[in-house]
Image (tube, rainbow, N blue to C red; front, top):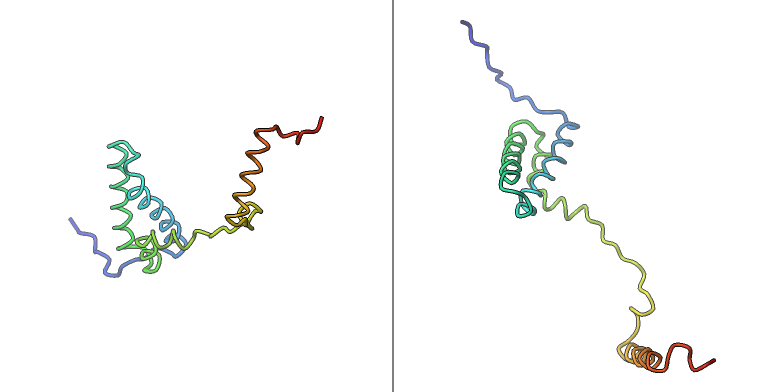
Length: 119
């Protein structure tokens, strides 16, 4: 029997496929790290195995940059999070004195009723 010749060159995946695998890998690695306590033992083993396989594929077949990004998924996750800043509401801008005065007014209205004494 003849043996098949082994490929001497490493074959890397295309950038598009590497990007897709990176996205999947980041999700699997996040589940394996952050949500393993939420999974059953069997599901946890499967996720752990998937993470190991994806890391192996990253090392052997993915482009270097996507493999690195996948392995550093925590940094990637934090980069992608947008910081949402909404304009402050009036009550959020109040000073402590204004806040105390407002609380006193609300309590007074609760005691005498919200109608303001008008009939």
